Length: 549
Image 1: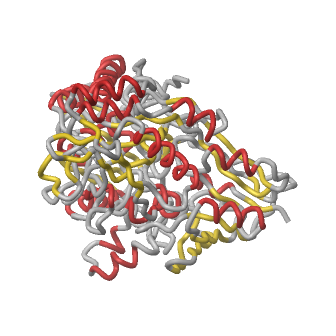
Image 2: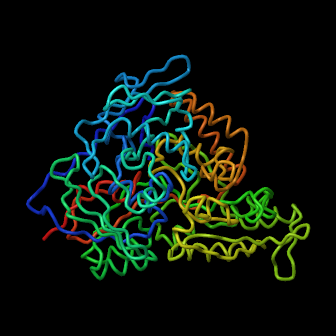
Image 3: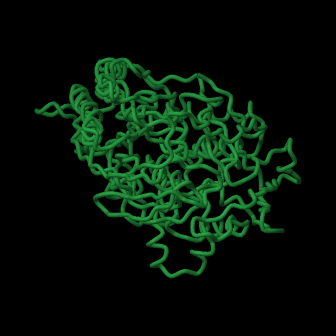
C-alpha cells in the first residue's frame, strides 16, 4: 500500500469526525484499559508508546494530530497551515508558518490556552536537557506571538516536516518558572486540554483519567473515566481481558490476535501499520561507546546475521502468515522505496564469515583476533512472541557460528530517557529486537529518518541523550541526503533522497528488518466508538469511546 500523504504540498485531513451517538451509546461509565507502565508521562521526555497512549492522547493535545489515513489534521490549531492557504510562506530560503489557535479552548484547570503556550513549549524543548529529541525544533529561529490566538513560527530554512511539530503543548501558566517539584508532578499527572484529566498515578498499579468537563468538543468524551491498569506483560493483559477484568488492550501482536479472536466476547480492531519489527545492530561497544563494537563493527558479521535470519519462516510459523517479511524501515506510504534486503541463505553466511577470518572454536562459536562472536540480544520482558523469535534467532545464528544470549528488560527500562539510563538511549545492547518505523507522531519521513539516522542523532552526553540513532551508525552520505530532502518541499525529490538513504542502510546492514507489522487492538464487545489507527496509538480517539449498559 502506498498511500499518498502529502505533507509539503499538503493534502490535509480534516479532524476525524466523532461518531454520532446512537441508541446503543451510553454516556458515562468507566473503561478499564490494560497497558504497561511508562517511565514518565511528560510527552517531551519520552517517545515511547506508553507515554504517548496515556498522556499525549488521553490528556495532552497538540496543534496537530495524525488520522488513520496518515495525514495530519488540526487539533488545537484551526487549520494546518499550507502554502495554498497562505499559512506557509517561503522567502530567501527561509520558511514562516502561521498557526491560528482555536478560540475558547481552556486547560483542564480552567486557564485559557493561548499562543504563549506554543512559544513556551518550544523554549522548553530547546532548553530542557531531559527532552527526548529536538529534531525539527532546532531549525526554528524564533516564534512571534502577535495576539493570543496566533503563533508565527520562523524557520531558518525549510522544514518539510513542519506539519508534524507541536504535537504536544505545555501549560505555560503551570510550568513557567516552576520549581522542579512541579515538573516532577507534571510527569505523573500532566495537565492538558484533552478529553480526560489524569487525577491519579499509582506506580506499579494503575492510573486514573477522569472526564474533562472543559473539553473543547461538546458532548465528549462519553466516558466518565478511564482506568489504566498497569500490567507486566501482554499475556497478563490478555488473561485479564478474557476474564473481563479489563475492557481493552492495545498493540497486539499477530499471534495474540489468532488467540483472542476465538473469544466471542472480544472484538479485534485492525489497521495497516507503518511499523516494522526489526533487530537493530549496535555499531558501538555497549560498555565503551567511544569504540566500535568488537563483533558487530564488522560489516561481514552483520551481513551474515541478515543471511542467517529466516524471515519467511518466522512469519509463517510464529505469526500465522499474518505479516509480510520486511525489506526496509519504511514499508508503506508515499516514501516507501522499492528496495530489498538479502534473503535467507545460511550457507552463504558461513562462507562469508570464513573468508573474513572468523574461525569456529571447539564449541562451534567463531572468533577473530581473539574476539569471540558473542552478542547480547535485548528486547522487552513479558512478550511471548519476541521471546519465541529470539529463540529462533539464537538457534539460527548459532548455526553459522555466532552466539547470542538473551538479556530482556522491562519496556519502561528499554524506552526510558537518557537521564534514567534507558537501554536504547545509552546503547547497552549488541542487538535489539523492537519496533521501528513511521507512526506515533513521526509520519513524515524527514522527521523520522533525521531522528533515527543522522550522526548528530546518536544519543550521547554531548547532546544530553537527544535523538534516536540507537544503532550509533554514522555516514556522511546519509546526512547529506537528509539535508537535501530537508531543504525542499518537492515530493519527488524527497522520495528519491529517502530511497537512497534506505538503500545505504541495507548496504551497511545496520539492522534486520524482520516483518511489517499490522495494527491490532482488542476490546470487549461492551465497548464501542474505537477506531484503530496504524499511524497512532490506540487511545488516539478515546473521546469517542463508550461502554454499553
